[in-house]
Length: 224
Image 1 (cartoon, rainbow, N blue to C red):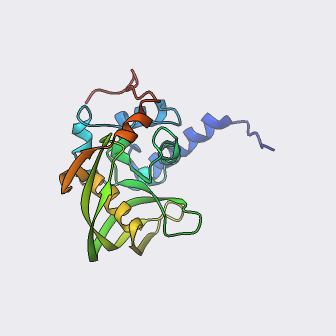
Image 2: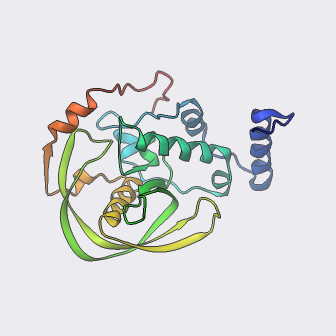
């Protein structure tokens, strides 16, 4: 059952946005970012090399108070989650630059937890890396259909803003999940796994899987 307010959904979002502006004195997200977030379907366009190199190779900026409390952030994180889980992508993580938003946030599949849930991390900071370095296979939604062997540490300590409480949290992660974290964190630094890979090769099975889907950039997509 739904409770319907006289203001309507758009009215409530406008009121929330007005409160953010009044409290912070600044607009949440840029005009370009708001266009991408608002115009995208639930399945967002995923940026790819080489045509989207500019944003994929840029260091992302932090989410400020206006962005952290904005309806745009809630819409963005929900659409990113839908995108990474969609059969056309079927990933284990996705970072904001991969959907055209140059901000410091990503989703990671917590393969170290029961049910392997996806969890969202805002303004993450990689505090330390340690332990054994393994050279395991990696791919990237933004660099299909390649794979590579990449050296990664098996233990990390990361601090981030919790999406619900907006409090800073520090956590230690290990194993394959720690590798996913490092991969997604690199995206926020403008680094791709192909920059660190010992070797690269074409993954033909992945290429065949992707051929079943369409990946055109939307006509409304803003110019760089």
